[in-house]
Length: 77
Image (cartoon, rainbow, N blue to C red; front, side, top):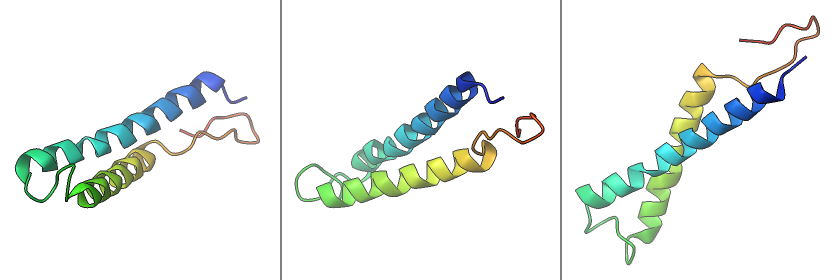
């Protein structure tokens, strides 16, 4: 049987991957503030955060696939 603690840990890891990807937006603001800022460059800043989050989440999912309960009772690792 799949332990809910496993699912909880997996979901927290997924959320952390998304947040860490979003922090790239802060780095881009430091590197190129004339392009990525809260005034004229907000849309570009949000795109950078979104794309980076997607990449981070994809990387997390490649190393930690979704926890599933297999028919024989073994959890997929």
